[in-house]
Image 1 (cartoon, rainbow, N blue to C red):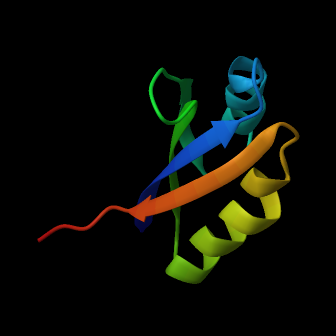
Image 2: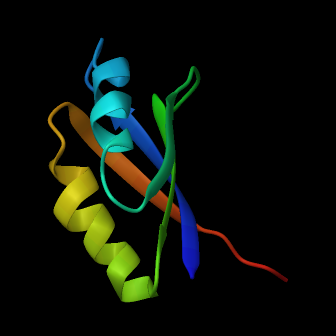
Length: 77
């Protein structure tokens, strides 16, 4: 299992609706709107890195109101 944090910037005033929409996507563990340089932080998981990439590109980035994402895979060192 691969997990990652997805840091999301949204259009002004869209953070809450983006977080709500993303929270319903299969593979998303949590999606919360926050303050700071990013508007929404998502924790997601998938079976493989490729599936995680597909989740981000095909589902998360397609949500209306998102302007930029940064995916940070979780590592266990």
